Length: 150
Image (cartoon, rainbow, N blue to C red):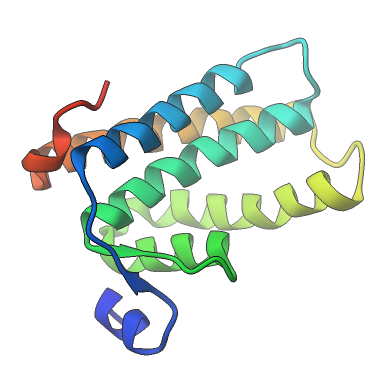
């Protein structure tokens, strides 16, 4: 399935982005990674922040490809769309973030003490790598949208 297929099925919307929007999403990712590194908050909140950093970078890459997700099933569709557009080297990261999506929802809405330090550290480390990987891909594949990204 392609991004165009997801669009035809109503799972994605067309989106024209700007370098400012992309820079803004990477600023959000940077802020979440900073928040995720704070030992003074619970492993659950750090996990959620690390996940959100990866999500923001994923949204930026999806926007560079001319699409955005609708509000319904937003998180799920970001990961599903990225599976269609990123190469196989991202397969394990995308699976991890999709699993983290479910755990994030449970930790955020339903259960305390659900996430341990090891799980947090795995998502945090992968989020840092993912954000940097997508930053590099945008610089290479979408140079006109790269300016302003810090």
